[in-house]
Image (cartoon, rainbow, N blue to C red):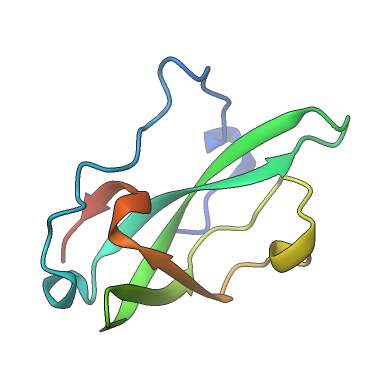
Length: 103
């Protein structure tokens, strides 16, 4: 979902999507779906940020899902997600899904 910058906005913590509502889903039925996930990062000024991005689910195995990041990150990432870019493979769990778009 390579979106124009004009479609990117910030949402306060009270109104941001919350993970967990898809924790009981059958992971094998999510293959091909878009899942929205929250990624801990920092704004360019160093303040904390949760960036919400879409991942296309490609595999489901032993309770873990793997998919391809479908957004260009704007946050500053460190550690495991340093250098995160659109097209990277991400591993995540059902409990982290904030929203879902099925094919």
